[in-house]
Structures are given as structure tokens and as C-alpha cells.
Image (cartoon, rainbow, N blue to C red; front, side, top):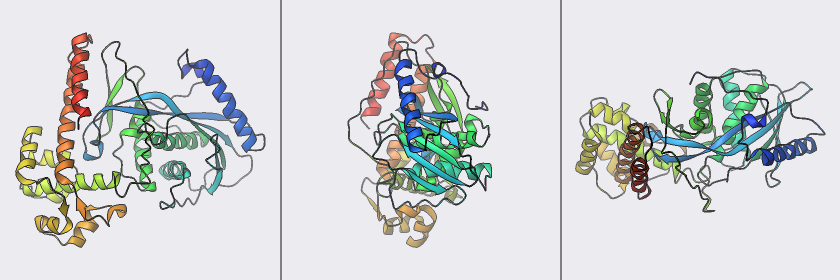
Length: 387
């Protein structure tokens, strides 16, 4: 994936023919909103980043395992104009009136993670890309955001916004990066807003292939297209139940990351790994133990119990003070946590990572994509749905 993010000059190079008319109308509306927000200014260019749906490999990327998502047509679009006046101020508006316009100094970005503002994701993308590019005095930009990815629906609207802003800012400074470079930078960007994702969302947004799912692996980051059964249709339905990752990070997403980290470390220690403190992901623990998925699950059954672990119990198992466990193995947003579901987390990760590998094998070993293959794929996903 050492391919630069492409630049196109026609909407027909981005959208399907049946969607083109609606997209032309949409971009006209973005242009009108831009002029209204920025005193008649006209965009110099547009950046775009798609959302994604994950077919299989849920909650395993931050444990080091591969995932199998695909990009969707729904996207974030950012219209960009470079200000004619000197300075480092960036002003961001949104076509959705419930998201107020705001400005910040691009040379001194401070993100208040305690305030759950939509602009935090935009500022995270801006901050991450300017730091990665060494832009200590970035240009003054006007940005108009338009999104058609349902927010909080599990389709990575927030990550797409981070990616799109980073792409817009890089182009606004005449910088050309590869898809891989953007994916790695944007994965780090989201840590500025207090979430500890593993990189799937950002990677598929930049590295997707049309007409294929992608098997994305980490350490190092790489992506491979996976051919799905011919004629397969995936229905992506929005339940309208909103889950805002940033808002609930301390008690949900980030806590789950910490529980997986503690599980990995405990597996390595109880399995007799000498440098167990280095096994901070379940994949690292598995590699250190040189064990198959079945062998790892057997170790989990032997050493773990299904009840919540307390910090006091973990202190005894690790042979470390509680304070050291908190400072060494937990994140800033989860330091108050005192109850950890280790058995459930590690069991899910190992089972799901194994299913993901099986799914890819099924697709790879039947290139003609027969009906029988479609049935096998559906059965694999059915098991995934029961987790």
C-alpha cells in the first residue's frame, strides 16, 4: 500500500453511475453552504473518506489480530479553501445545523477530552497530521464538513471524519502521502481524543478496494483484498441505537482494551513467559507461548475464572502493587476502574480471531465463489453473530 491517495477530477471517478446525479446535487449543496459560512468563498478542493462495515473480526484489532472489513458508499466530505490572509487559524463548519461552526489556532491545538464536542475528532485529525508533517506554522484553512454516515451506528463516522480532515489538511499544504502513511497517522490521531482503537477503521477508510473486502493485518500494517461470493449482498441496517465511543470510552471501549491487555499479560505470566510484561496484546502472548488458538483457549479455561477480577486479585496474580498495575497497564481514562471481565474478553478475542482466519481461508480457497462457498461464509458469520 505504498500508493498515494488518488486525486480525481470528476465525481464519476468516485461514485457509481446510479448515485452520480444525487451526489452532484449534494456537492452543489456543500458548495452553497461553504459560501454562506465563509463570506462567499469557493472551495479550492474536496476531500473524501468512506465509512466501513466490519464483516468479521470484531474487537480484535487492538489485540493485534487481523480483521476483515469493507468500505461503504456512505462517506464524509470536506470542502476546503486556503485563506488568502496569513495566520494559522482554522475554521470548521458543518452542513448539519446542529453542529456549530468553530475556530482554533492550528499551531496550538488543545483538545478538551472532557467536553464531548463533534469538533474534537476534526481537531484530532488536524493535530495529528500537522505534527506528523512537522507543520509548526500551518496555513489558515476554511473547512466545511458534510457527512452521510449515520453517527454512533458502528460505521466509523468519527474515524472517517478524522481521516478526511487529515487528508484535507495534507492536501492544503501540498503534501502527498501514501494510503499506508495516512492510515498509520490517523490511527494515532484518535488517541488525542482519548480512545484507544487498534487501527481497523482508519486503515479500511484509506486502503479499501472497490468490490472487495480487505483482510487488514497489523504489526506491520498491511492489507489484502478478499474476494467475496459472486452476487453476495450485505444489508447494513441502522437500529437507531446510538453508541458514542468517545462519550463512553472510560466505561466501555477503553475499558475493554485494558481488559484485553490485562488478559494478555496474565496469560503470558501464568504460561511461564519470562518477559511477560512485554506481552501487552493477546497476539503477543500467543506468539510468546507458541500456542494455537485451541491451546490458548485451553490455557484460558485452566487459569481464568468467569467472574469479574478485582484489582486486589490481579495484584496477587501479577505479584505487583495495585498502584503499579494502574500506572503500567491501564490508560488515563480507566484508572478508576476496579472490576475487570478478563475471561469473557480473552475468550471472545481468541474465538473471533480464529473465526476471522477461517473466513479468509473459505474465501481464498474457492476463487470461483460458488453457492456452496456463500453458504460456508454465511455460516461463519452466523457464529460471529452469536458472540
